[in-house]
Length: 355
Image 1 (cartoon, rainbow, N blue to C red):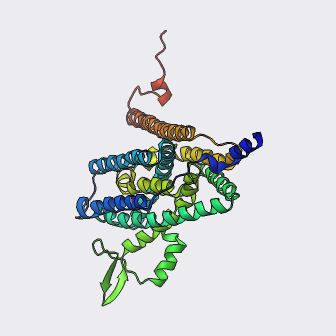
Image 2: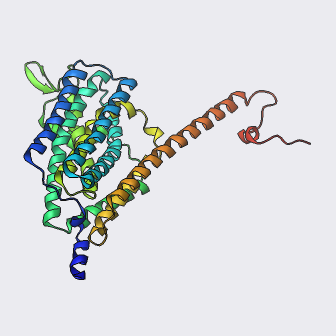
Image 3: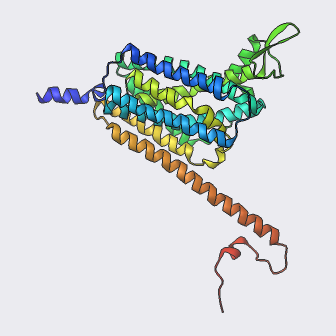
């Protein structure tokens, strides 16, 4: 009896929920995702326009709210344990996707994409990302089910990625040096001029790709890179394809709005990279030790939420202090040439000594 209990405890998969997903539930999920995409494309953003910060903030709240609300649907259909795995996966994917937003900003800036056309290319980028994530998720779950040792490979890779984030500086990738883009441009005739929101246009009776097509290619390419990190991370908290796909889908659906809200705020998140590294390291360890000890979903959820909140909070506090220091230095330099001015900024900050 004791040996059978220990054997059950040692099986990492036995600690995750095991649900039976009906065909109508998959159809409902895909229909909801398709409806949200169509409403966004054909109603909210039917006309090309520059997305302002207020609009992006409202849309971000709505998208995140939809993702959080689906937790209730998962709980209703499959129970509280399944909803805990869903929300954990949602938070992991949402936090890891923030870096993706900053890479998009770099690509948009390199190709000088007009603001009013950026939403449309990001729409197709998200559409492609959903298809790519589905492939990654189904392949990853299939591998784990057939080969238990894949868990160790995924876990080790997440630890390696976490170490890279901690011990290497941010790399400013030059989109123009992408070998993938060079291959695409070699086989797809392209032009340097935009034609509204079109990915392809005609020049001299010849069909050519506009710069928006190159942007879309790079966005899809970067999503493949990010999916290599994020999909194994979500698989550390759930092995159910429905839960993993739903958490990924709802997390990345709102990335367009988040992009317009955060694209110019990269410098304000000084500790985000370290926070993401801690999250990746945590889920990597969770995946490796799953055969011997299963970290409860509630603890996983708490760790992810606390680390993400702390990294953002510390980043904003650090940015505010840096801004105050810069203002003080500017004020000091403006008055340093005046008679009787202090010799250094330390003199200004130090308390006055009497007698």
